[in-house]
Image (cartoon, rainbow, N blue to C red; front, top):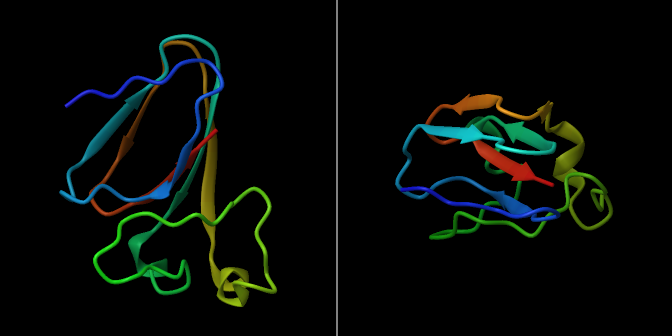
Amino acid sequence: MMFFGGAGSRVFLHFDMDLSHVFITQFKGRKRVILFDNKYSEALYKLSFMVQRYIDPEQPDYNKYPGLKNVEGYETILEDGETLFMPSGIWYYMN
């Protein structure tokens, strides 16, 4: 499968339900990517049968989601032509 996003597109925090390995390629411009290991699913408030959360990792609400204080993520900026490999089960957010 291939998904395309235009300028200013945003991908809410989620992991891929088929647990596939994913390559993200930035064709033009820049894209900020924040990744979280699947071991943090509980602290990311994963709901049963859901793969997406509407938690904003850029401005986390620690009052509503105090468990987020214990989550460590990885951040990168993809530039023109760069590709990021994400192993199965990784939570990710793009802006």
